[in-house]
Every structure is written in structure tokens, then in C-alpha cells.
Image (tube, rainbow, N blue to C red):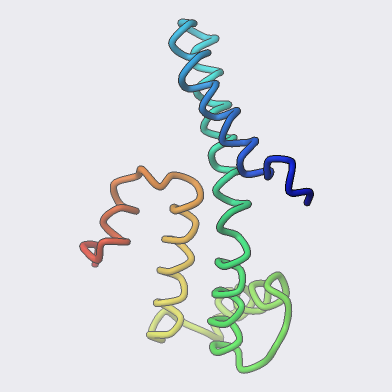
Length: 127
């Protein structure tokens, strides 16, 4: 990345802001709706770019602890899913429940951080 250019996150932020602050107020009906959808998609992509490296590393760490070996995020997730599907692993394990809860919260943080359940979860109010 060159220091004289905006980052991908900055560019996406500018597009999202333009859609929300310029296009949506200046349009109505279907065009305004499509601008809102586009702004939401751009926002989700921006958050995913910003948050994914940390989220993926945290998930790999938790999965390695659950499965007791190394591997890629994709491989570890596939193995865990296969174990659950085969009945080899149940939701009685506290580590597994905690991992699944964290994955859900991390996904909400990327997809829709304004969602009330996400806000409750990160504030500790969600059981």
C-alpha cells in the first residue's frame, strides 16, 4: 500500500457515507431502497476487511484448543462441523458453547453492529 493513497477501508467508508448522506436523501422509493442496501453491503465489507484478521486468529486459537491440533481455519471448522454432525461432539462442552457464542457475536459485529442483540452481547447483558 502506498502512503499517498487511501486504504480500502477508507475508500469503502467514503462510498458508504456518500450513499447514506447524498444518494438516499436525494432519492425515494426503489432507488433509495437500493442505495440503502448498497450502503449496508459496503459497510459490511468495510467491517470485514478491518476485523477479519483478528477474528480469524481468535477463531483458529479457540479451534486448536477444542480439537487439540493445528490447521487452517477452514479445515478446523470443517472438522468441528463433521464431529458435531456425527454426534462425536455435543453442546455439553463449555469450550464449544463459548466458541460458538463468540463466533456468533463476531459475525454480528461484522454483519450488523447496530443490532440490539449484538450490543447486549458485547456489553455483557446477553446470557
